[in-house]
Image 1 (cartoon, rainbow, N blue to C red):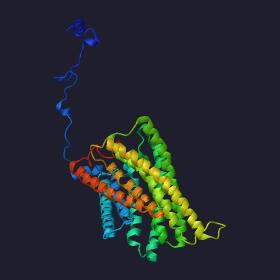
Image 2: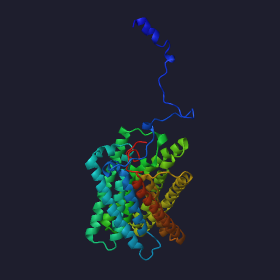
Image 3: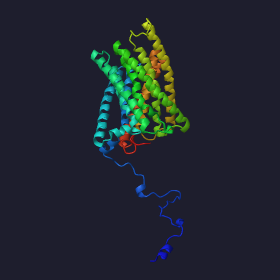
Image 4: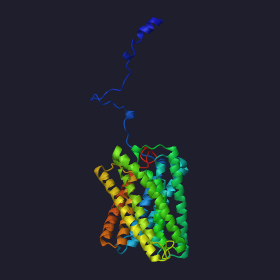
Length: 409
């Protein structure tokens, strides 16, 4: 065929040529979806393949169970068997922690990618929940086994405290340094999980408030000093993050309904700071005195009054964050389970313990009663989330491609 005939066979204008398109359905504005493009139901995966998506966020389970055990140990209105129930939860949490650690080790042994999980823009932020679980176990160790401490026991707690301070301070420095240089987070997408790297070092003060009273004076004063220092560091970082969080809410509105349970994370920092300050002030040894003063009793009482005033101040901030988060979740409850649901438990345990601590300090039967009522709510919420957690694993709502914290938003 000659060249002129070929040219005549071609369309004269480019718009005359229309590529074949997918057929349309009966509704003209709805394209027909080919079978290969239809959304498929979740196909079953082997446990080995699902283990690839077993993320650091699973430690939210153990930190919540440990927090619940600590909450029961602090109950103002004890009943027969209360201590045993708390001890049972504490021991079960140790089993759960061992199980989660074993599964995390299996994930990295089979599939690798441990460093990648630390560097992930979303999953990496949940690594601090491992240390939060450790914090609850250290405090629970004193609450349930420290009634008649031996010198070896108190020395063990002292060593664990200083190791925890070193590791969590290093975590706060290294992880934030990495985040500042390797990721770009938009303020319009700010979530309270940005606070998590500072959360473990902040709980140094909470640990000190629990174990300092059973320590000798030579160990108690350095512990309380470090506890106040690191509690202040963690709370100040959290407070700076709060400014971004409030700005994000003002500019972009509430998070999507699936992420709203994570809003309860903001309840934790002021609540844990309140209970830590009061506990550390009450745990000061009788020999403590301010330089230049001879009245040790007056010095201790002055610090305790300041701690109570500050604690009540911070409790109100925690209560405000709780109300905002609760209203947001009630207005639009999440439709599927995510591990961030545990944020409805752990920060609120700190809020409840802070309420009980203030009630004990003010010797108010009413505040203690409110604390007991809040405890019942926390227990119910723990059971609710725990059951849904198990169902989510069974239904492949978690530990499944695209559904866990190893997936970017």
